[in-house]
Image (cartoon, rainbow, N blue to C red; front, side, top):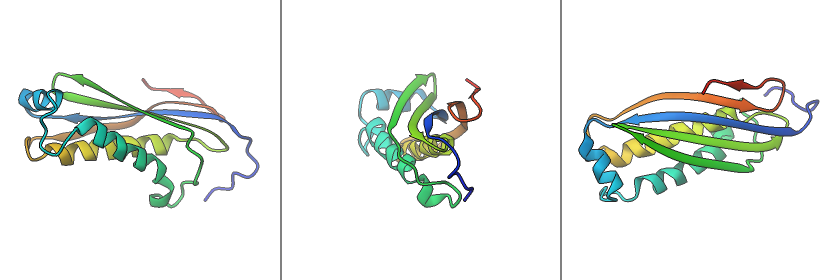
Length: 142
């Protein structure tokens, strides 16, 4: 891992997204009506995403274990697309971009897993960092 002992603790924030596209309007209706056979897809996927953010350093060898002080997960439905937005914050020496993108990908995979029995045309798209603040550089791709 990169030596970060010389860095100062600052507020670090990252916002990432993933998009799950379903293949039919009926899938969105079943989600909205809470009738997915495997349960509440948004709450189950939220829990999976929280675990994904927390376990990032366990799975990616170069990531530093760090204190996650906030994780927020939101969903936006637009037509056949479910947009997942994750915000992660810490007050630490290194950023949380990878944690946010990892969390977004885990949420998307969990949505996929829960919806695959009712929709065979699912697709995961656009896992990316939208914004980061803190540290040496701020970026905004949103």
